[in-house]
Image (tube, rainbow, N blue to C red; front, side, top):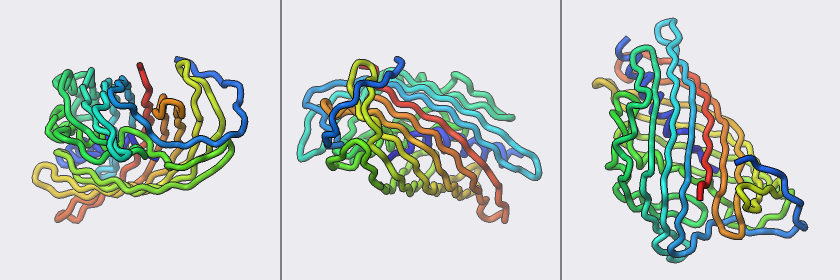
Length: 291
């Protein structure tokens, strides 16, 4: 449905390229009758929500027989206000409440040094009722740290912020398949993610006082990226697979919580040098409604 972990993973992959070139508790609610619900976003005009997104990832690259590791951690808080809804499309003002991006590698340690500069910045975003961003306004102009040191911009970060929904009526126990393609152009890299997955309406759970539909799924796909590091063109290909959990409040039409665990093994090709670097990645991401 979405790969919110990829902005952090992409930043870390770029950091690896620099290194190479340089060298509330949920509880199960009583089950409702097996009545179908429609899974689609329905943000009311003037509604306002605050979310927190956290992520961690580990990447390993083989460079001339040596394993190079990069670890990342991120926290992002943001508030979004729905200005209007027109023909099942929503327009938001998004304000950054906080952001921190930590990158640690053998040649750099930026713990706590990236992200504070975007606090209070805002941009306009439009979203379809299945959760796919339609436009990002000036988000791509808001830089997070230095792209050469693992940073990026908010356009890439928000390109996959919400899980995609099937826009149809589903019943408890029902399973459905979904596929998606996401293209992102940021200051750090250009990328395309092609994914597919199988998802199941597992049941109901109560999260933060909201009765939610629990959706579980397995996903797989590939990520393709292009970047230029220190004057060298590089191409990244990473097949991935993993699991996802989504807690969706059907009465409000919003996601209350989202978790994903993904991993992949791929390659980075240094164009023009005849060099191919093997890399592996694993990541966890969590999006949660604060209020």
